[in-house]
Image 1 (cartoon, rainbow, N blue to C red):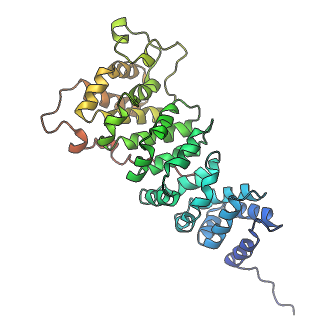
Image 2: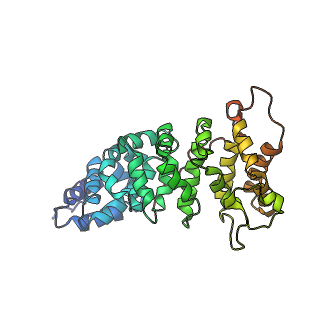
Image 3: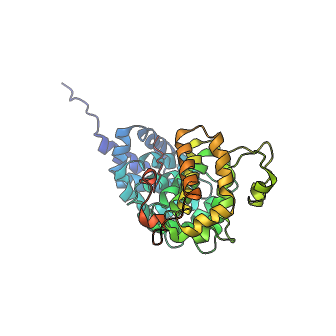
Length: 342
């Protein structure tokens, strides 16, 4: 009587698959496709995350110029959504850096790895000294990948990430601000989240509002509409917000409008910030937005900023609202992360 045929265990099968995941292997493209199919299920992702050798082989394949690079990188995006994949994939971060300028999938891997606040500093350390350089390269392409937004937002959870975004030259910050009106919603959402996270530290406010950076007009523009104001009010606005054309439209996503308003509320937490927002006619923009806004969350956020701008100044010693208390509706917002599971 013939002995029954037994199927190899999933672990053994994965080990055999891993042996084929070499850029020099003729079977590597097919092995990478098989790994991608495996990563399409929760059990398959968990299995990959528990096998560092497989993740290492996929990382090497993803960084290569072979035919299996694309499916290998896609498999890594899926596998990196598993918490257990963090440790083995941190070692692979340097090999993914050359892919950042144009690869949304590489950004997706790093975004998944940095979702948790405790993991963000570790991903930054894995990026190496001068982490702002690969981020700037990714930002500087004509159409940055959408997944870059989630990555920047996640990294900005950590003080090290905020320092990288606010590096002394201002190149990263300038590019972030220039993309506040980019057409990709996912990218805009992440960039606004990163800028908002940077504002949780009031030490950053002076630079953001300085004439060298002039972040305020760029933050207000997506909230401004094409309404005609009396001339004496129009003159109170920054030049970029005066006489907007009829085709100008406010930010279309309520969540992003809400985050922009939360950013303004954080900037208004200090007395110099409040004075600056008032001097630039911010109330006028918010007044018109309040009349137009229909989303309940964004409307409440708008009312919160207006209340701070038109209210009485706090008593001496309580001028910095961030040192007194963080508004309840903002608690938990630091690190508005997004993963990219399949």
